[in-house]
Image (tube, each protein chain N blue to C red):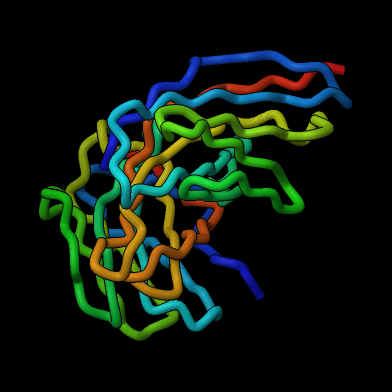
Length: 113
Length: 114
């Protein structure tokens, strides 16, 4: 699975959009971008994933660049409960691949009032 | 029900003790996982079970012994642990090992080895 690079930490203001970048310049054509987050003292929580098109769900939006070498997770209206470590994971997602997550360092996001 | 439960929440054990961690899910998932997470570090995969059979062992020391008695239950038996084994132990499940599904995590068991 391709390696990802994320900033170690970032702050954002409550009510504003939080834009979390992830670099995955060695991504292969059959690798998806997954985002999980881990709120303090809880297990990781799945947020969203995508291959090349932008994706949106009730939690967030995922914007993947055209060359797929980077992506941005957008939390549209950050709340204090969004304070967490956010992990960007790139992995092959096909029936032939093992469903195994390799977590990198993540970005520690602090939402401030 | 999209919940993975883990018991106990906290466990303190001595280096000569034998204890077990328990994980349960009732989502009909056929893949289950154990991860270990040291303080301020990301989770690291330990074991993967698929259809109650061990599929992956990430070179984990034998003092950790996993068991999957049925499709809903996953145990991690602990024996002769070292203080450096103190960590948060996370269980996860997914519908299948092969398919690209997301994993659902439990809250973890915080283990302290004294």
